Image (cartoon, rainbow, N blue to C red):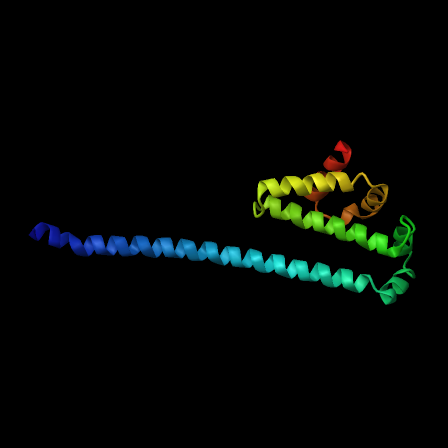
Length: 151
């Protein structure tokens, strides 16, 4: 019995160290998840604010003065169509990034991938894509190019 009691402090310290290590790992995971969730919420708000600002008559009138916007607006029937296409492309890129980070369910990703494939059969989407693809990440460009060629 005396031998066992000599090991109790060592066993207790080992258990405490193990629990502390597990707690630190869990804290790190929780912190990472909170950061990811915050990034997603911020990105979502930025996209929403951008779309709300762009979709105003004031911005549209100013944008028409830009040769770049004038060219892009001429690819579709209205500036609102242009904004809609760009919003979809940005949404697909956001979902694409979530998939790459393994944050969304793989089955849900398959649905979004199919939607991207379907949407990219719309000629106006391809016209806008051809003019704006350079602003997206290479990985996403490759993805869209792949799903558009499957269509």
